[in-house]
Length: 266
Image (cartoon, rainbow, N blue to C red; front, side, top):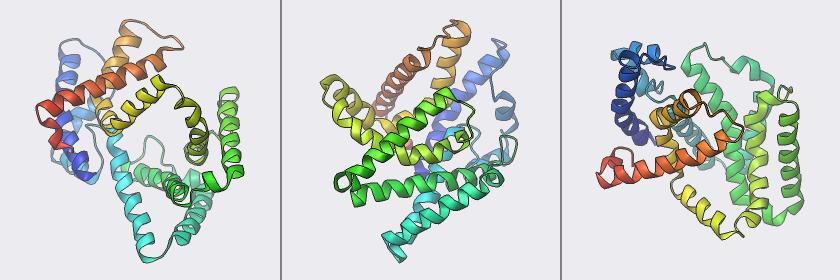
């Protein structure tokens, strides 16, 4: 994961630099994050990238968080047992709920505090994924599967009707527990359609590459073109943009693979 983190950072730097340079000095566009980018072109910025504070592609925080989460969880599994990991997750959830506001540093605070917050709130969902796959309660406990699925549907509907509800700040934690069972239930329906099945298989096969490549150039540039230049601010636009960006990411990856640039991050 760290190879992908460093390798893709190196690969993304040149196109990002070109885009920001052209936007700033030729097209006079106000690109978000421009000042942050220029201010980090120094030794301190390089050291921050190595430590996990990535000014080239901030979306890569997930890889660093996943390294930490994996290390903690696998250490517990190695020295203890799966039930210990389960009890650890319960304690972690209680800790997260009690200290949520204290953990969350906000957008103006230091990155490392933000990374710690993300590790703490994503780790319970990661542990739930381990338990979900190992215990296979979806086949042995249909009742729990339906309860989690109903909770997801209720939470999703509630968030649409009341976007500023009190549970909104816990969305990541709550969806981490309720979305997988819901998707497992609906997967039999979705996979019944051959076109959907093939599409999901393709997207799944390239999921890691899509995650890497969508930032920092493809998504921002595409969004800028569609929303600000072509003024396509419709309700359906984000969904269409998602499909288009996925296709662009897969096509870009295939080009990288042909010219062997994929070896930087794979």
